[in-house]
Amino acid sequence: MAKILVIDDDAAMRKVVRRTLADARHEIIEAADGIEGIKSFRAETPAIVVTDIIMPEQEASRRSGKCAPPIGRRDHRHVGGGAGL
Image 1 (tube, one colour):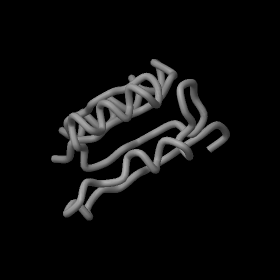
Image 2 (tube, helix red, strand yellow):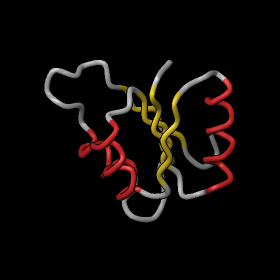
Image 3 (cartoon, one colour):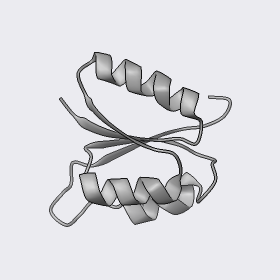
Image 4 (spheres, one colour):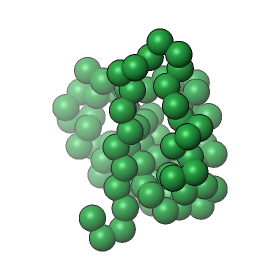
């Protein structure tokens, strides 16, 4: 299964996403803000990033440029969500 990084400042939302994805046997990495998310992305090289759009320590729009896949890694995907979705 896939290694998935979940970035959200709402602990309850991370818990829901983690349980849902873990039930499908994915490996879940969590980050509580954009700075932690960038560090986790670089350290863990997840296949998928699920992120909140608006949160402390950098919004996803500013963060997404820093999470570009490493050279030779074209399979990386970002999945974002936000309030009201």
